[in-house]
Length: 262
Image 1 (cartoon, rainbow, N blue to C red):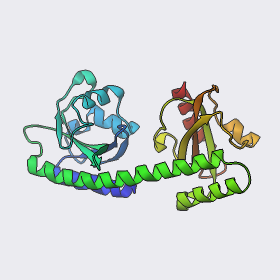
Image 2: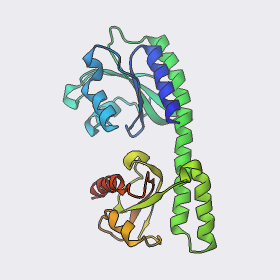
Image 3: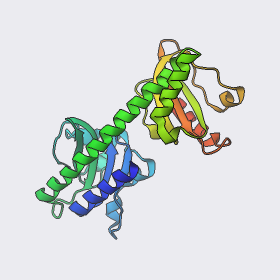
Image 4: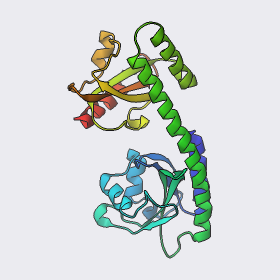
């Protein structure tokens, strides 16, 4: 699926003549066009940060959203704002599916030589195909969240066996191999993106405390814990491991989630 996004972003870059960047509606990077220009300004701080950290800063997000991009159905030109960390203007192409915004394609904008209306219209046609892909991903993530939640809340015995079988079917080939379960509790707010912890196969929130199976002592000690609190949610992530010794990266990422959870 990631390759499909990259191909579509490259198609937009070719249509408009400038590198394009695709982010989801939470401003997290999905794909970006190649930078093959000698103009260092093409890699301005906002684009560099998005590529290196895979997300935009809150200040940049607030500046962009202030121009109504969450409601827009066509290209939106956004001027530069050094105060917000935006040193070059942008053209935002909202990515929608059935009226719902699912992401944004970003183009650097030089109003004097930037892409004209016909090129932008062609690029918007491509964003509709991106929207179809994003909608499929959103549905798949929701299905996986439902199946993982069912496993974690099922009673022991046949009910859990059926839930595990359904989760394995939903995971497909990615369900093979070693996995570990990471839990962060309490967890405020909505589910984070899958990329918050590398290798995440499925994630969900559920009431805390929840009837989850006890982890072996070795696995339990490897996972950071936030301080529990009644009446809150817990975040559970099923994470693929490259090897039995591959917990270090997962532990570090889980620690970051604990910090963000407070």
